[in-house]
Length: 314
Image (tube, rainbow, N blue to C red):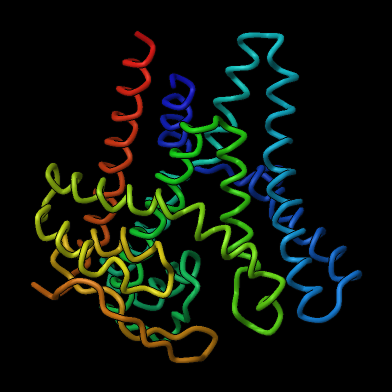
């Protein structure tokens, strides 16, 4: 548990390093290479589906056993083992990075530069951003902070606590697979189905835990925890993802804003169900408030896990 706390603090201080040998970048490269190899030997819908299963198994297996093997090699030296373990944990979580990326959008809007805000937003969302107005930019930024509070913070910590850095890195592989091949387009409709379903399964519990933690976090931040809970229970399923709606609904309810609605992806209009009630109009500060909820939720999770660990050690 001390290694997890150290890795978390290291991420808060340094943020995500932009190194070419960053494990998550290595996972991305392994996905591209493995996909290319699989596509040479498959044909038809059945072949692509089977290839999709193979892609997920191979990439997740490489991620897990690579970290496991490195830690096993380092285990002969106590200091080296913990140093390497802390470094892996640091690579897996992305608290500071999420904060910085969202604040780039915040600062651009605060300066009145909507064009720059759209550009900064395009780095962290999948939707089209070139024609978004200020309110739509705020909504998109809050939604991605809420969703990534689960995907980039709580879920990795959850799996690290459950099975150490190897399981945490396996989760990152699942998440990266979904972001690279989990699309319902012509290229990945069948090859990416296994990765998308695996991501849904892996995030089922962490997403709901995140929603509860966000509600609890609002007790320490501006917002309504009761409204957050009611909104999460009511609107948690109002999303194309079986999981993302829960943290988004919790944030929307706590802040008293409405998320969801119309978005554009690759030039196509997508009507999403709305999440939350527009108790008030959205404002730029809602981006910062969502970040504050993210930090508080992650600290609460760390505190709970530390408490469970130290009680079990007694």
